[in-house]
Amino acid sequence: MILDIVQYGHPVLRQKCRNVTEVDDQIVQLVADMLETMVDANGVGLAAPQVGVDLRLAVIDVSHDPECISFLKVNGEDADLESIMPLVFINPELAYSEEKESGTEGCLSIRGIRAEVRRPAAVRATLPQLDGSVLEIETDGLLARALQHEIDHLNGVLFVDRLAPVAKVSMKNRLKRLLGQNGQG
Image (cartoon, rainbow, N blue to C red):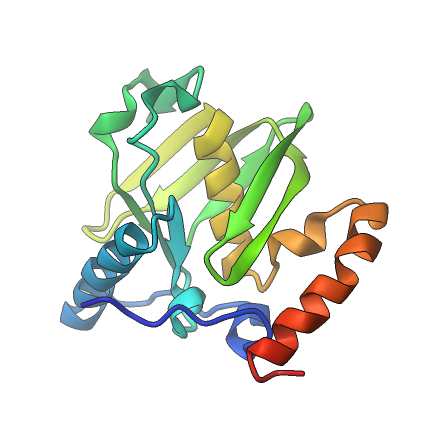
């Protein structure tokens, strides 16, 4: 089922989400609905708060562009993108590389706005799976950026919070207009 994606200004987008403590039929159904919603919206990632659910759960699928990364290690072994996509995870932990790079980001919860965001170039993510197993992923490129973006959502952080100060100032009026359009202004 395609879910409604909450928009900029909704309070759930600013919450630090609760840990998933039990994977039951409701969680499994939520994941299926989130994947369907993400595909329908042409997104590469979707976090539970974006569909109004205060849980540390997200989905990512960047398999449409296998060249979007230069390396991928899963549990210490070289892996290909298709072997882990779509990626579903709960209660993630993230470590960052020191090297940073800029890239254009958008968000399904902030329609019509895209901007350059500077983030760590590579990540090491500990991603508990629904079946109780854990994936340790090391990667870069779009997958690293998507992991950071979605895990930010689980902490109540939006990509516009990560903009350079000058970009934040220039974005201020556009964000205010969005709040008004979304009934939050």
